[in-house]
Amino acid sequence: MAAAATAATKAHVIAFGKWTSVPWPMETGEKGAKPLLLKIRPLIVDERIKEYTLGAPHDVTDRLFVVRRVFRLNDSLPEEPVPHWQWERGG
Image (cartoon, rainbow, N blue to C red; front, side):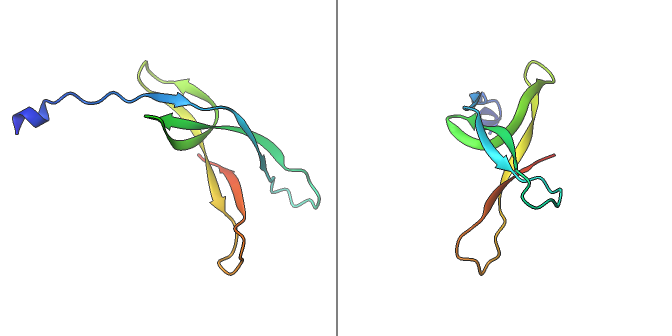
C-alpha cells in the first residue's frame, strides 16, 4: 500500500489551440442587432480538448494560471427538431 502512495504523479501537458471567432448575441433587446464576435480557443490537456476559453490566461504562480471559460449551450426547446447552439461566457 505504501508503494502506491509514493508513486510519482504523471505530468500533464497543457496547451491552447487555435483562435476561432464565434458569434455571441448581445441581449440588448434591439431587433436586427448584429452579434458580437468572440475569439475563443480550446484548452487542450494531454492531446484532448477539455474546455473552451476566452481571453488570455493570467499566471498566478509558476505552476498555476487562470483563464475565463466559455460554454456552448443548446438553446432549443425539446420539441424543436434542430438544436440551436450558442456560446455563453463563463465566470
